[in-house]
Length: 283
Image (cartoon, rainbow, N blue to C red; front, side, top):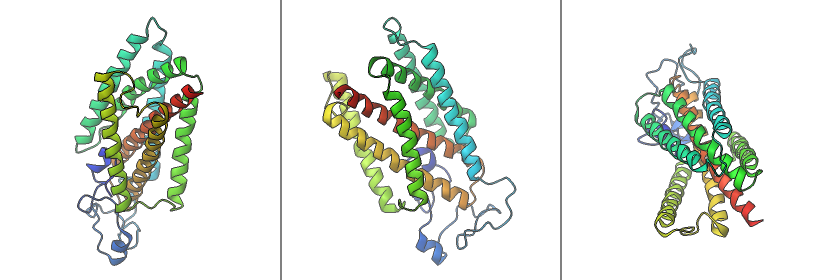
């Protein structure tokens, strides 16, 4: 199953002719192809057990957790610093917004560069996290100042709850990541992104709320859809990490796992922030 995240989809996390993961019937039949078969520490597809003792050369859950903590920690640190150091009062708000836009563009470029690299670059990943944090800090500060001081906390707590809920559901196998699940999520994500692009273009050239997909009742519906898509992306990402650990992905792949999870969590946070902003305006 290829991940929704372009970081995973271009690297060793994708396999089986474009689909990452191993179908249960393939594993039982012994026909699954392990892309890390040349790795002496990779697991046997039939037993799921390592073929040789691990010597620190393969990815582990601890590696993913530590790299994710570093990446998210960088996002949070720069977000807090930008909130404090880049005031969003009327006299400086245009300057702050300008810095936020530039930071978002730089973060996007760094993300794309990393996505097309053959190997993960911690410097690029942490650089992405730093600039993404600047963007989130300014946007969050402006939302807290001019919309509602509580929506940022609500969005943060909501993101944590979505992550915990999806992780629990995935570990309990209530969510089964299959090819059909992947196809549905990707089709829904493509439609969602195209509608948001169209809405942005109408806002840019026509003014107002565009097609209304980000305000009012439709905005609430699309906000919920965006959060649900983010939750689905998390399930796909968890599957990629699980397969990487089980089948002996190189240890450096943990940086890609951290990168992908961070991107997904940023998506969920922004969707929740928009959703709570709309709900706050309706009160």
